[in-house]
Amino acid sequence: MKLHSFDEWSPLREIVLGSASGYREQARDLSFHLFFYDNLVHDNPKTHRGYYPRLATGDEPADEEKSTVSIKKRYVDELHEDVEGMAEALESLGVRVRRPIDIYEGATQFSTLAWSAAALPPLNVRDNTLILGNEIVETPPMMRSRYFETQLLKPLFMEYFEHGARWTVMPRPWMTDHSFDLSYAEQAGGMEFVPTVNDSPYDVGIEMLFDAAQCLRFGRDLLVNIATENHLLAVEWLERHLEGRYTIHRMHRLTDSHIDSVVLPLRPGTLLIRSRQFLDYLPVALQKWDVIEAPEPKVQNFPQYDEDDVILTSPFIDLNVLSIDEHTVMINDSCPELGRVLEQHGFDVVPVRHRHRRLFGGGLHCFTLDTVRDGGLEDYFS
Image 1 (cartoon, rainbow, N blue to C red):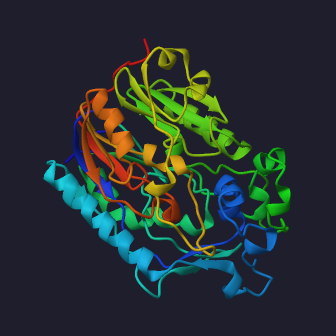
Image 2 (cartoon, rainbow, N blue to C red):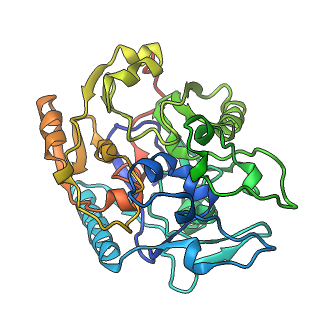
């Protein structure tokens, strides 16, 4: 099919679903710590500075024991089962499911001139690719371990390109320690949890670091969250690149990075939101939409983990749903309260199993990249 996806809710025809194959560990470097800052500080009992050391630079010996977080095999096995179950559920709804290249054993370690990291598989495929109509935009990653992740989607991107899609790659960052804006952690008063920032011969100052999951698509309008100077630079690039085609609405610190566990549009005129307190951050046009407030997460909705298991997401991760069309929403079956609320508002609910979303940093919206939907370049804000 031709690439065609302008919004988050119109009838879904084709989607990329991430792969859990090869997931063994998380790199524990400065980029990891800053990206998951809120959750590392507040949701993990063993959080302290030494628990999240930075990776070695080119002139330091790497300490492999301390530079990664191993993930227990049973969690990875269950993750793989759940992702494959999502694929079956999507296909049963008539959606064509596409998959990235798996990351293979023995190929997970990589180095650039400035740093080394353990690569992650292409699981949260929403994060590093923004689909705008018939254009693929690869965004500059915020985590070093994800630097080459979109390479694993290249066969799919090439296919869409051959069918007429535009394909753009935003400027790739060096990602040295001095590339990162530390102001969020500084203002939160938690700099004692941030690893030491070291100099590098490749320092160029603050760079564009930005995930596509900081954007929500409303036809011709984009809602974009900005929390750091890294994000701001990237949004300025997007505004220049998209001038005359899209209108970007800037939101400042709605969240620390990703937006889709705080607010999601389910159809024109209806928003799913974590709390009404976030409405003030939104454009005036969206403040007039109907609001469905997500139910408070319950402890029993989540697996209980060991102290050495690292929690990466907010308890509100189950707000991260996937709209199949304007009337049908795929949700996590571990959150029946949300399902009942959506049904009360006239939605058909498709529950799927996703147990370890807090360990692997993403929900159903994060794990998917919708590449073909029926909607067009409409104006939903007037």
